[in-house]
Image (cartoon, rainbow over all chains, first blue to last red; front, side, top):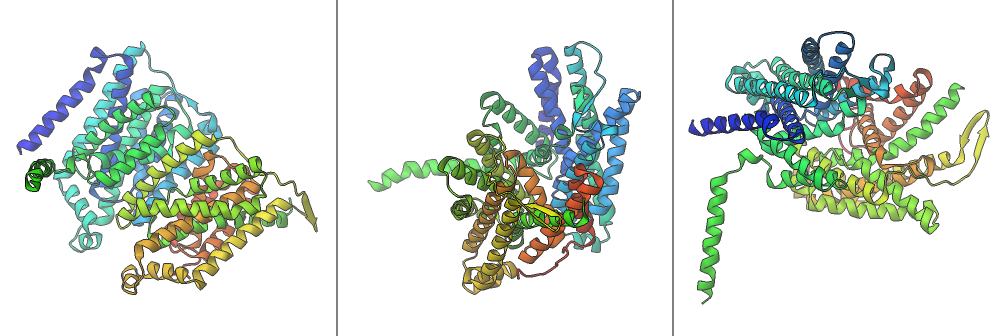
Length: 325
Length: 286
């Protein structure tokens, strides 16, 4: 219990720090803070299907991209901004529920491939349906009114609110029936079915939850940058980056995705700034490192054992020269 | 355009597709790993062939075996050093790992080779047979692709190493008990997958321009073909490749080229749900 309280205090401090950036730092830092909040929300979302349920979903970019386009199209047709964001959220959740009913029947490798294919199909449809989506030329989205500082602060608070909502949903699911059922499915789907868990409904709920916040984030992102195009909205890099963030922090944990997204975005910013040409290779290197040395994520590391081991090594290191004498 | 012409175009394209997918299918079937590096292997093979032809003036067909061997060594090393360590982990881990390795390889290629589209120009003219026109270099590419696929089939059926790979695919534990070094076979299989990718890239560079921007496109084709044809068998990849080639060719003509790829992916999604074993659903490898 005190550990959990400590983690909550840490999270509050982290969100407080992100929220304070418009007053204490320059615009670049605010932009980083927005990115962190955005990816935290998406990593938390992915955690429902990928972490709790253990389904290797790579469809994040499809949800994000559809959110971008629904939000942008609604705003261009005169729908007020906040209503457009809501519309994007609802339609992405419905899309995911309908899609989930079909592809959640697949397992393992087939599900992974299917979920990647969904991103490709949606991207191709959006880029060839030029009359509605503008095709490869992309779409302009009405700009937010106000000075750049004010716009950045506004976007930041909206993103932070989405991140908090995703976190609250995670806590609720984690403690509730749904989370219990999802963990059962993760361990053994047939056994979960046998003991009376409606696996299909649970999985669809997890999939829709994993899409919902991505849709909102996409719509807000579109309003923020003011221009969207298919390659940017449905990028395959995004679809892998988000699971990697959750894995980095610890998939299936409550705080893991937030930690992972924060660490990943900060590392990425650092490498973009210092090694522009090699940034992709360095990100690849981080992934390889993560798989081999942090397979359970940062939060799953047993720090006490690590400490004990280094202490013991130091002891034996001191002893061995004596033994040699 | 004549329907026969569209069909022949599709078959020629499909033979190349089969060659692209067969290595990917082998790795997926035997190792149970979705190899995200496959697209980059193909481009690497294509680039190496181009450089040997452009700077050293070598005949691309003679270069092909050397490129394939290089890719085999690269694939073997990657599997032996990295992927073997997590080969039994869930798909999320292995897919993410190969994606990470792919980001490194992709970055190396864009920095050292740049993303300029490159093509080996053979200038062989074209032939006209009963109203069907076909450039000779494409026919050559189709011939080479079919030859390579047939060679792999013979190796899998006839050679000791091929039988060992099939045995590991059927039952890993039993194969180990029969004295097969499973980890070695995994590395050899991944090496062969890379080899086939490199060879396919070399053939592709003689027919179409290759660039690093195409890695994702090739990978996507491999996904689709594996699902259409069925996993982990040479005939499956051949049927899947030819089917995709013909479907894309007709869809491109009747619906417009921008929809050709979409149709392929949609077909794949439908097949995934309706018939995940593919059109040629076999359990073992051959």
